[in-house]
Length: 335
Image (cartoon, one colour):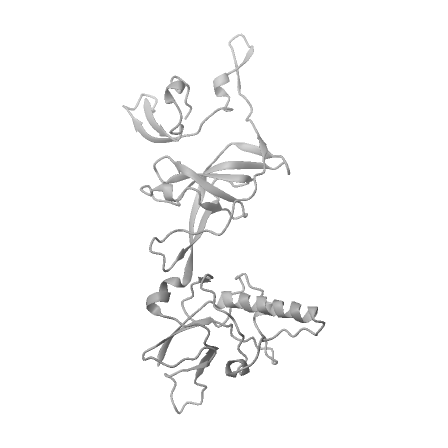
């Protein structure tokens, strides 16, 4: 008697597809008619119609809770090539990798045919008790090999854009984009942001940026998009990653990459003009935001004035650790 754990239906489907494509090319190069079916037949497992596939310990496998009757259409698999169809048009269940754990030692020559039965089926019931069949392709020692299986789960955290950076006119398509935005609702206030710096952030439209730093002390963060983004305030931000089951560090892994940079020219807002009492116009230089920095009010201090405003505020995000704040003493700050 043995317990069975199934996994790898998506990955083995892709592997079968590659094997079939390779066979197709080989047959075509030899001038023979291509036969898209099972390859390298010979032996009891072959007579059962099982393909010869090598198990790759270095391959990543998406975790699945149980046996899959079919592969979800949303998965990145060419189902028309992978899922076989019988003569009557019914689709066959996808192939799986399976780990057999026997309660007592069993002699198992490699390449043997294994057949599993449903032991919970009534003996006198008019039903097929065959549950699965497969070919033995690899030895497995739980003490040595459990950590070698690279099974992962997909994770997703959703935040939103709370503030936009300066607007730019992208040079190659003349679109108005932002290269920097500020996000929230993705991390808690006490989260150590250093472990998330450099991770990729995605938008609904497919734009990809990376986390640059925290913004203030309330869990907000700064994101840079090298190709620009048309994001608006309130739009969703996605942090997608995967974690491996046997990773003691529970590290975050991402497969994506940042797009190539697409440069643009900054769009300056119109400079406000004020009138003097004599009617002449002058430009208020401090109203220009060309060299403006954006911060966040963390706390208000002092007694409330007659106009309902506070005389002092504590602001974060205006300067970096490398800035000499003394050089900015006396400059005007607009709330």
